[in-house]
Image 1 (cartoon, rainbow, N blue to C red):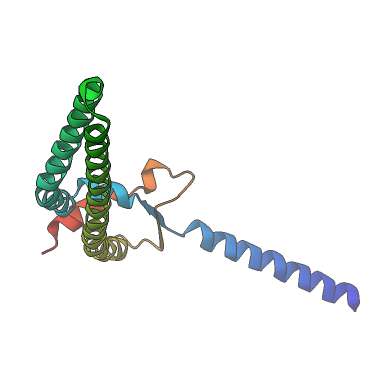
Image 2 (image 1 turned 30 degrees about the vertical axis):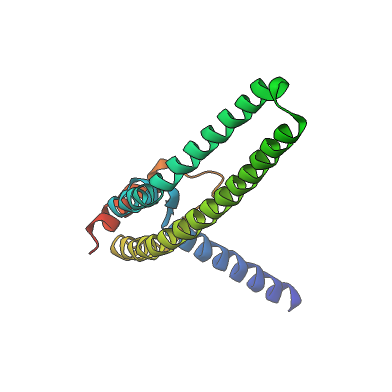
Length: 170
């Protein structure tokens, strides 16, 4: 009786393994490179343009200040032999103060830029996720991987389709 039960159990296991294998073969998988979607979609390019427009003036101003500070430091180095000790120390303090102010302005700029970049990215991420879900449902894809995948065949990369879907969203 135990042998018969063992055979039945073994047969059932083989049958279940075959069923699971058949189901696994029917699983449809897709992969999306979200960074590519963000960089190449119309809304992604528009967000990048907005950031560029919003921050380019401040960035140029920082570069100008950096250039002026560098020129002032070079001027002090050149003039140092002719300057009195008091004047050299005064100009040195001024340069140090300007350097700290420039560093502070750079940190503020970076913080503001990162904050705005994050805002734009979050808004775009929602659109991309909606597009991924719509494409997956339309194409009857069971599972979609995003971001970090060690390897994905081109045949399962649906990034370009998602870009089109994001561009079509209103």
